[in-house]
Image 1: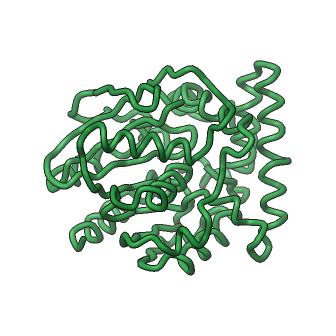
Image 2 (image 1 turned 90 degrees about the vertical axis):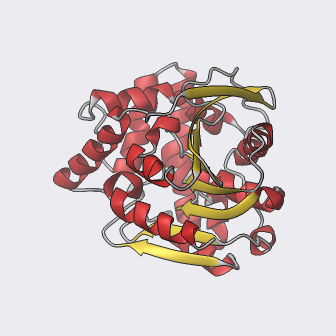
Length: 305
């Protein structure tokens, strides 16, 4: 999740209802599984057969945040696995701030792929999950067949990008510093209110559907880990990203958050084998608001790999 421009009430309501629909959906017809890697318990669903496709969710989300429609559609051709990262629902791993980062999550993902004996996989990552997938591709290239990235949160690149310096400062002064203070006071409502104000551009905590509030609340341990870790949103170096040999599909929204626009452009410039698909009138929530388009472009991309 990254900051939204301020939205009109009808647009904001539509986004919240779309997110709520995903939050309320059944987790699919596949059973819940559980495994342990790197001292962390990870829950996941596993459906279909064939070349594995592993889904890595974004911040304040979990394995249930993916559209069942997308997962079931791909499961007709692939083995589709959606897991929850170490501090996300329903995992109950002891919270540690020191050393936590997207690189930690990538190490978990690598161990997860090996533990399940998946071999090289297609990886689909959104936002913080996209950053995790990028780290995996730079550190463990033999595990990656292809990458599907929807707006990876490579925010550490911002100070070096045109106009990115102020966006980077804003990320910490408007979001992470107040969120950290609310956590220190044990004020979960304060954490959620600040987060929604930053991302939605309005104080909508009391307006969001209860199902969406449940999803956000149950994933607050991850938000706390990010807020207090010294370098949670670490960046893969550009030279490492430039050496990624796997083909990459970069999905971006034409109406996405200001903080993500320079990052999306830089990724398109740096990644050597990238195909970028811009979705008109889509924001960072493109998985919820443009499900059919996302499903189609991913299916077409993977069919050619």
